[in-house]
Length: 128
Image (cartoon, rainbow, N blue to C red; front, side):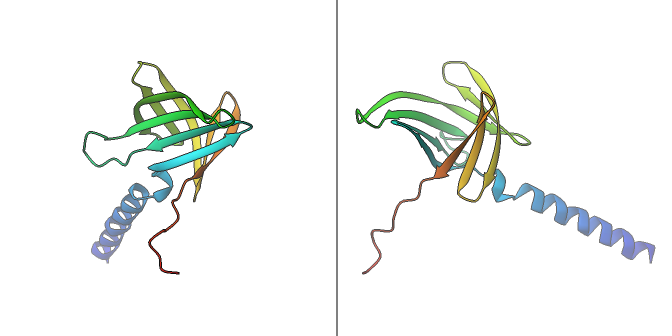
């Protein structure tokens, strides 16, 4: 009986570890955007795939009214327990609290929660 109990505990522990590591709520890769007045912020998180774009991000700010990009920053990111740390190419490091719920990513910046929407392209190959 003790053997079965230990086997159960070991199996249960492995399942917990695997489900904790595979949580899609920690995956942020994709393109996220938020519009605020005439300003659009877009963050592109690249998937951790062991290539040159490993944990890379691009953060672009667009002036919607002028139809032009006003700034672009690049760097790498790391996901922590409820945080995303941005390491900019310029050397600046910023850690923000975040939550992800489906296609919504909320970043806490300067004490304010800013909700980004996941950008998804429409399927233009589907037959009508």
